[in-house]
Figure 1 (tube, rainbow, N blue to C red):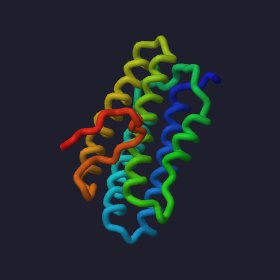
Figure 2 (figure 1 turned 180 degrees about the vertical axis):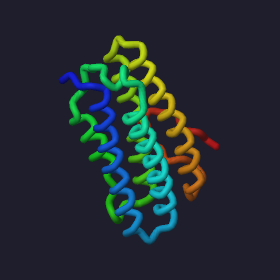
Figure 3 (figure 1 turned 180 degrees about the horizontal axis):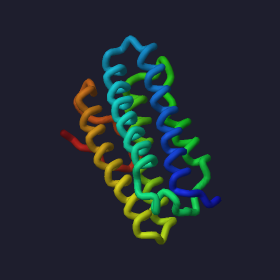
Length: 168
């Protein structure tokens, strides 16, 4: 682990979001499936809002938070999250949705870890607020994606093989 200022961590998050935005746009432009395009448009819109918010905080946020130092997990973790969220031209909508939901959970966990790496209350509050916002966005995105499922059920990932199955 290295030490970085919060401002640099925010810059890395923004860079990661731009990569996902670019992948969503490229995949959307190449796709002829309307369901896939609607999901990708939703992802694009959500990530664009998040990127804009982070950039605004980077420019206008609390300088005390932005200049704070944090023992930061390497950017390799962000790189892996972005790589795992990359979309390909022929990827089905269900796979896109599953990757998006996985990214959301990893981002929530990432913010939680960053909050835990600090003992500065303002830094902890900053990452806790980002985590809560990400949880809200993930829940909303889940419901949005659910609307585009052929059977009406949201995509499910990593279901344990011994989990009870519903008989409805």
